[in-house]
Length: 102
Image (cartoon, rainbow, N blue to C red; front, side):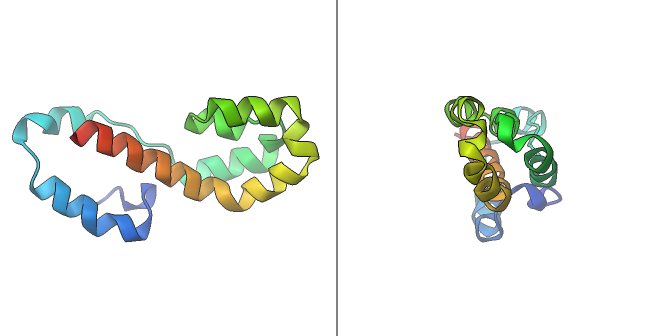
């Protein structure tokens, strides 16, 4: 649970249960996973959100291209992402963890 900053608080208990019931052969795969830091995503979004770099960084290529082509949705989309990017990063981390456990 030392990586709880990478996930939403309501997901941590479920992740703990999954990890306790996980097969031992999956531990090496899980230990090599690197998760994106939500704080870093926010900082990138503040400084380069108009170019979509924040979305490219977390793996949302389609949204990144959309922000790049529209200059962050003419600034509006970039401002909205300042509030949403941390949650989106945590959701991507959760999806990555689920793929590693499955």
